[in-house]
Length: 109
Length: 127
Image (cartoon, rainbow over all chains, first blue to last red; front, side):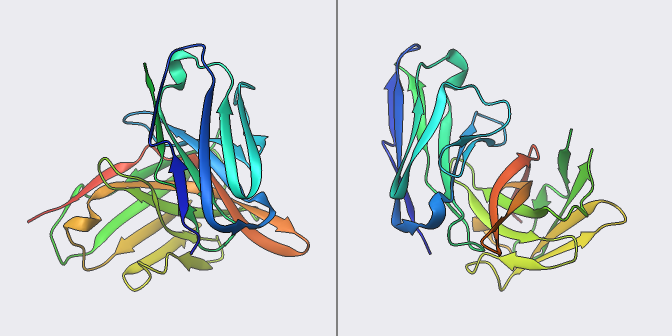
């Protein structure tokens, strides 16, 4: 099973700042099969990024994903008030077994 | 616009079976491009994939839960269902259903990301 580790656990930033979130896999994720989700309190997760770098439909271009192998990054170029949330990565490279990272909380500084 | 909605009891007794149904609207569960999955989230914790099913009935389960999980599909009702047996307090969680995209790469079919998700339903295991 591929174990995902996310860092930092919490990121405290101000609106307008840049957020850089890390997702590291215990072994190489084949074909960059990694997705990112955003979850706000009391809501279901929302898909942001798939294939490590492809934005999902309707996702603003301030969200970008990068990386390959074992190291992946989600970048939010300029934080908007609605971006403060928890972010999860998910790998599907070891399909049909799927794992999620523990999450990174982005909160207001 | 595709929507998914979970339904079922919010309280289950220990050792009993948890049963939930996900109703899909705005699209067909019989699409050849998607699997349909269950994911859960204990209060204040992260996400855990439970299992996924194709409209034909083909299933994949999380190895850690496989002995207790059954996922089934009813294409006539556009629904798929989850049964989790012998529940304990550790099974208390918000249970989500979601559509899972299939990817074909080099002739190999890979199950991918989850989108969209249902709103989730809290199931508490308690006597």
